[in-house]
Image (cartoon, rainbow, N blue to C red; front, side):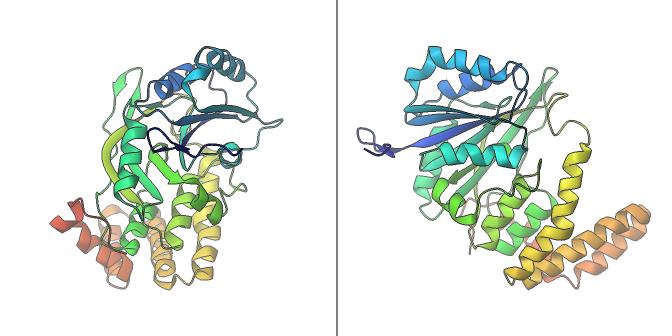
Length: 314
């Protein structure tokens, strides 16, 4: 008999929460506690570890002994070697059975209503296969200002521009497993970068990213997190993707205007490094006039309608 994708009593779709760990011993129990405390019942718990050499896996297994009855199913995936974030995430999705996937790092937290609110959102937006909420960053010193993304993008081109320039908070992603597999999973040649290529793969196939105007994830900032300081390995992956892989993908998918926008974005990035602030700003404004995607994105960002709660127009 197959794995139950739907709770027949409550009609709730199965959600696979994938905890992605690597040397997460210090915080992983808090992460797991936040998942067990979810108001949503039909949850499969997957823990995928990227060859931690501390006590991460042992701590997870001890926790599971005490809480396994809370979940529809549990799986622990261990890698015999360290392979990087995208590969670790892919192993988690491969082990999952849920209709929907919620990934979370082994040091972050879900608010108690998170899975319920994600499911309510996708149920009320039947065409949505990928949505993103807001994130509240915090540390031992307190909370930082949370992330904010527009509630609505007038077009996929606007959304592409936003994701390219600002990016979306990966800890707040929620997506349909079947669509993720259809798109080919995370790119494992990038060891630390998964969020930007992930978003771009959806956009290039014509899927809008739904925006849920709620803070559903607490993102922990500490000395071991990827966002702490400037991680040179992450920046190497990022540069390789935006300078080499993304242009090739845009051309292969016939996204000519997006390709042109990317080239201007990269040129503008170099201008900021080489030219003082005021001349650089003038040059960038002039470039905007020959960049249809950038120009319309600037205009739309200043319109009141860009802050409405309506669905994006495809």
